[in-house]
Amino acid sequence: MTIEIADWSPFWAEKFRLKASDIRRVLGNTALRIDHIGSTAIAGMAAKPIIDMQISVAGFEPFERLVKPLNAIGYVWRQDNPDLAKRYFRESPDQERTHIHIRRSGNWHEQWALLFRDYMRAHEAEHPAYIALKRRLAAAHGGDRRAYTEGKSDHLWAVIRRADRWAAETGWAPALPDA
Image (cartoon, rainbow, N blue to C red; front, side):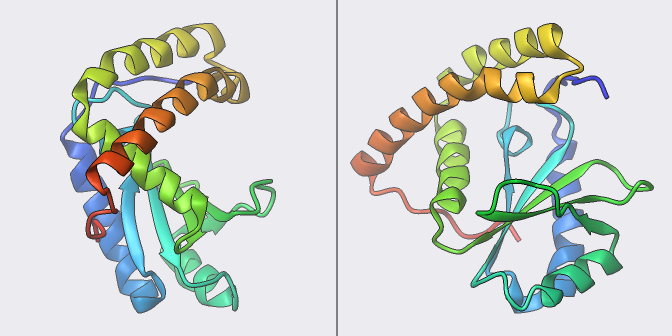
């Protein structure tokens, strides 16, 4: 599948809300937080038109309490995902592309996603360079998702260093969950 970078759409927030509502209904309080993350969560940011969601949980076990309800609404656990800090789900073949990242509450990776999102929401001046990089990488590596992702790495780490300083200066804490 070719990587497409689309201009920001106000419909992304509504798509998130609908998906998050279904997830909240089936997971209930097992989901401590449900957040819209990634570039589609940042107003004005161009992005792959795929909704990224983060579900924060107290722990992964018993795992069936996550798998069964999410399967019931069309999300499939991707057991082959090598990132052991999360459990990764994707849409069923008949659904719109959605990435669900389930992480333990308080985990560094959970906080990273929220800090990056909040910092980018608060710093619109950061958008043009990131958008330009994503468009260049999509043009150069449109069929190679790994190369596209790795090409963003240095930029993302530079942003997160600035975000970390911003968090310390402002006393940042994640806002209330999105759903």
